[in-house]
Amino acid sequence: MTTRKSHKARGATYETDVRDWFRGHGYDSERLARTGARDEGDVVVRSDFLASIGVIECKAPGAGNAIDLSGWTKEAQLEATHYAEARGLDKGKVLPAVLIKARGKSIADSYLVLRLGDVFGG
Image (cartoon, rainbow, N blue to C red; front, side):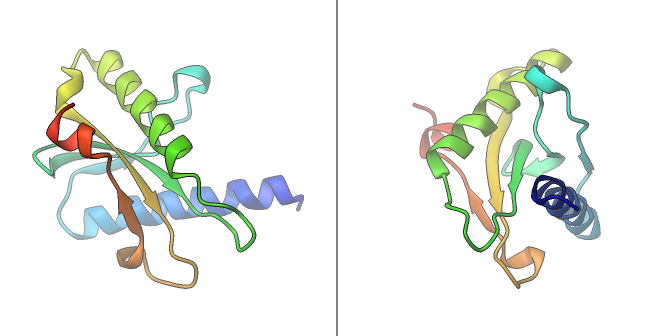
């Protein structure tokens, strides 16, 4: 398996695990299909995600990979906008988030990253 394929496989497994974790805790969630330039995120949580619909960009960086909070939050914002537009929703009701896997830890130990302005406006 090439490195690119193994990275994709690790990411897909993490996305499925995240969806299952939310479902196991009683949240309506699903893994979203990739849609190319109009990608809508990796996982959506439709019930009570901080009083919004949460569109989550999942990241499972390897040992040598840098964490790019700025780039990943911009990606999450764009994909949350695409999700809202595709469903005719108010963009203010869809909260973009990044979930970063903690290596060697459970899903519950992942890091949830939100921009202050996305949560409280501004």
